[in-house]
Length: 194
Image 1 (cartoon, rainbow, N blue to C red):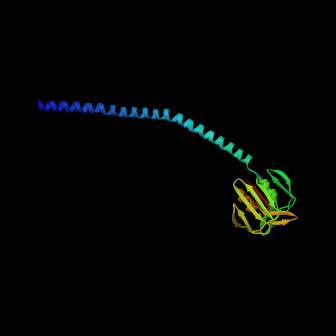
Image 2 (spheres, rainbow, N blue to C red; image 1 turned 30 degrees about the horizontal axis):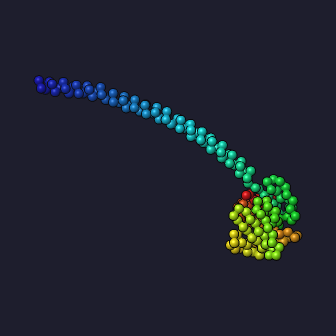
Image 3 (cartoon, helix red, strand yellow; image 1 turned 120 degrees about the vertical axis):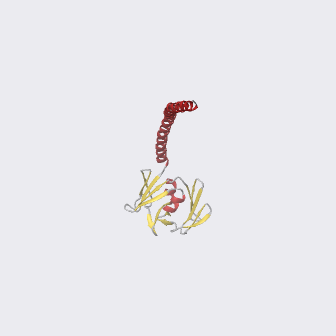
């Protein structure tokens, strides 16, 4: 009888396992479906917010580019030409830009004012001073030593006077005023952006 009872219990256990295993699998499947639905419900609004933020960021970047174009000054000077351009507006120069020792020289007052600097000339010391933001540049006619915020800097070429106008090295002045200076060799034009 004991053997018989053990067999019945064994069969019952096997039957219970046979019923329980699919139920456990179904429960796991239901849990996965529930979790997937939960994730979709939770992440979809976040994805929409991310997409909206990306669109807003793209619009802000475009607005920033437009503002930069409005706030950036572009100056173009061509060697040998008395017409320069500041933001595509023609400006007449008293003296055309020239090249001295492989450096572009431009009228000192024109380039300083075009880039937004205060320009001063001291006749006794033959000194040009540019002041812009927290930058002070001092150049001396015929001297290769300039001062940047009181510190001496050696120039490649000294400022000169051409046809009674002071000419200064464009790249030095432009870059120390925070501008970028590019050169178009084909047209012999310097493009200054600040």
